[in-house]
Length: 309
Length: 266
Image 1 (cartoon, rainbow over the protein chains, first blue to last red):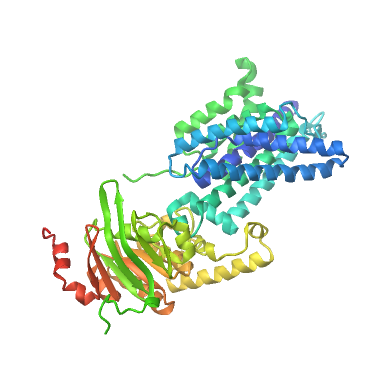
Image 2 (image 1 turned 90 degrees about the horizontal axis):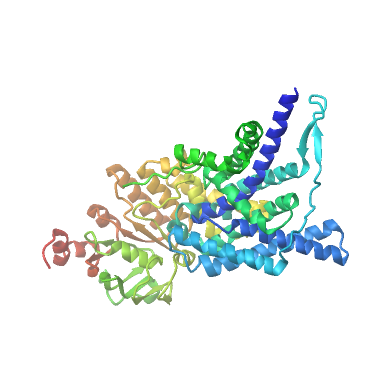
């Protein structure tokens, strides 16, 4: 029973970690779905959102606000910062480059990532800022079935909950609102969307704003887990295998890809690690992504690209 | 009977006026000094051999191409540059030669996107989907259902358009354009690839749209029978130049037009 309990514990912690990867991947999916642009700056956006939030929070608490009031105001402030960023990126980067090909736009987002990382740290500071939004201890579940109980980290559970809420809200948004439909339309056919009256510039601003808000959500969870610091931008690298496995254009794919990678990583580390000298966690995701690329390039849920010759 | 295309047309009858418009792509002159008008409520056909510049002309009216020379006057307002979504806002709707539907969405959703401009409630209201936004959504859905009934595509409303047969896709595209309640409807080869029966259906729809909703229609079409039956006036383009402009009978007997179609060197 102890062995099974260990398995369950590793599995659960893996799944929850995976959900947190999905949170970052979601931002990529939104932008790619609507504009075909792979946003290299998504990690930088998580950093910017996190820094804006934590600095506002610290400043307000120092002024005497209660913690949760400061969090509320801080979230609004960070959201506003992301909105301004979205507007600036649309106006000065995407707008002028509108008919260029995907690679050009990708390179532009690399530039944006440098500017955001530098700018964020210039404005808000470059220390490591703790962000205690969620309790960092753990629950011990099912103590009757498993001796000592299964350790489940509270941050991970809250993160999972936030991700679930986000996915539901996004799904409702895409299916049932005029803007959501317009986003799907732009993703399918730019020219037709324009001739129906949809302004591409407005849509791209909306998409980058939404990706910014998703980045803020990711920042709240990852910031609590790791502290808000520059290395949070490297989370974006972990999102890449998630996208490859789940498909670049699928919201459910991002979730499932994240779950697979999270669980796979932790399980591989726990069970194969000792035999291979450890360190599996670092490369497992990428190897898995490579295998998926070889077998099913569009990912599990991505759209199959069929080109007519 | 008024002289076709003559100078005695009352000015406020004209919905769209194209004046001395020229368009080049690098060294290729797609459209050369073309002028014509479209009157309110008429069905105007644009015909000509392949490569005549018909689709380019439509793209100019719609805002996809900006002409190097010339002016377009629509509903009294003259402009030289316009972007496609501005044309839509102004009341121009369009279908495309190669059926530009939103492939991942159902027929119903495609037509609902056509209502985008008519939906006034903003982003946040829509997200909450309560009160005014919900009533509006229901209202628009009712209008879309009217269009679906009109085009007789009830059976395939929920089907993803990529799976629909070509003729149905064309109808859905027409439905999406109609959902915009346009003043001017631009149809690019609406009958292409259709059999006799489908052509008859589509002709009936086009006539109904013109009679029932009073929509002005400009259409590009290759089937001469359809052109002669449906249109009030015709303009003929060849190699980017206008070679004839008038009622179907006049145009049909015009020697330059006959030469263009027969490929006589000129």
